[in-house]
Image (cartoon, one colour):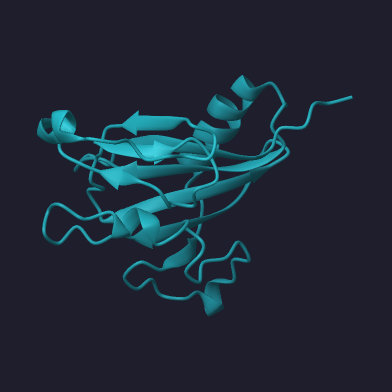
Length: 161
C-alpha cells in the first residue's frame, strides 16, 4: 500500500508499506493540507511509469520513467526521486535529440493514440472544462498491456467566466 500527500508532493512524502504492516503504523505522515491518500501499490509490468500532459482539452506530450523493480519490491525512491519529468524529461519532443532513459530518469515519448483517446474523450469531458492544464499518470499493469491510470495532477482549476 501507499500513503501519499493529497497535493504538491512531486513524489515527496509517499510512504510504502505492506498490508500486513498497517496495524504497526504508529503515526501517519503530516501533510500540508492534513489529507493523505491510501492507494494500492501496483508494480509496473514493463518497469515504467508514464505521464501525459494536457492543455485546454488536448493531449500535448508524454514522458516515461523507468523505475527499479529488480528486487520485486522497490522502495520509495522510485516515488521520491521527483515527478516523471524532473530528471531530464521534457515536453519539447524532438525525435532525433531524444535522451535515452536511465534509472530514475525520464524520456519524451510519442503519445499512443489509444491513450490520447482515453484522456481526451474519456477523462477530460468528465472535468467539464473546469481544468485547463495538468497531467495523467499511468502504468502497464500486466502482460496483456492493460493500462492502470493512477494519478490526475491538475495545474489549473480556474473557473470559466
